[in-house]
Length: 202
Length: 202
DNA sequence: ACCCCATGTTTCCAGTGGAAATATAACTGA
DNA sequence: TCAGTTATATTTCCACTGGAAACATGGGGT
Image (cartoon, rainbow over all chains, first blue to last red):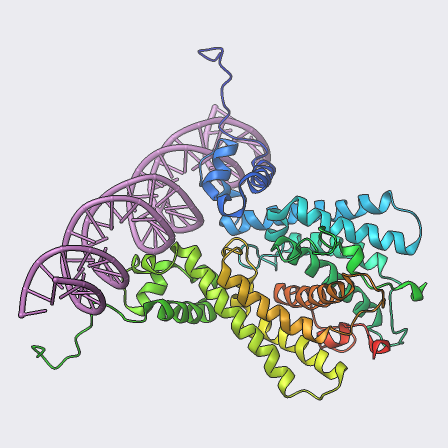
């Protein structure tokens, strides 16, 4: 029987690995990437700063796991947009791309971490798989976006990479502050307005 | 007369500000962004780690100055490509974009720093001006790239931002390792192969 | 019942950026 | 010429970081 009524903190956390990732995301959202230290994350979970070592390969490993969860949510963002979109090809295309950009602008620090070579290990299998899932959503809407109708074996892949480059570049530039309000309208341009009209592919 | 023949190190450096920026770029190229510490830069110049304080606002200020120099070189890269390009619109377009991507792949750490909100102050006037010069090169080749031929006041701006998003996204994804060798050819796709053919604008 | 080992803690260390006080020398004007 | 001022650089100190190493804890398998 414990000597007092106060709930005794168990020595072993039980689900520390997941708890650390979630705590990391919270810190990221509220304080940014610079504040995402091993000590800060561990403290939020109520654990010593060396405890993560048992589950991740140092700070870089933990950050990689956080980025992995980021890709999962990123794909979900786009899929959610697709789920409420009109069925037309163009509408689905816009929905997915808007989802891509909206994720970046609503979770800027997480999005940056996801593409930060400095902070993540891009050869991590889990990260690669999560990123692949995210890419698959984009690839899905570009299946008939092959503007040159060539029969080259990489034509499909070129369409996907073109789309990905455009939306990713736009999101990145927007986060960096390079998409200012237009002088003529007072409102920044959107990814939809930027996209060339590939309607002739329909 | 100095008491000995050995060259006496002057107490004042003379051109410390520029020397720090150049030393920083060297460290960046050889060791990456993580190694770009105040102490490492100062040591390379042969100065104490607090000396930069007199010329820059802390590490962030120095990194911002390095990024500024990066934009200058970035613009020069593209202009150099343009200078040896064929005079056709399409050739000039490809030359500038290839210059953009080539700078990113040959100076990956510097390029990343230039767009890293975490490490630079994007409201710095000098940085903004340098970035504007770089943008101006891209804007120059997209002057007739208005695919929709609309008369909206932001049509030109939309063409520029579309082009910038595409090339910047491609460069960023390439640096992150997401532009792999194609299964069909064994060679990664290039920005030229990705670009839709806007020839109908000629 | 025992022991192994996965999981956390404590302690220590080298390294970081920055603040504050101090040293040096260049410039300024009488 | 020579002080006084100012720009530049140093020294010292501090809080913080990630990681290594030794140790503590207790759950789970035999």
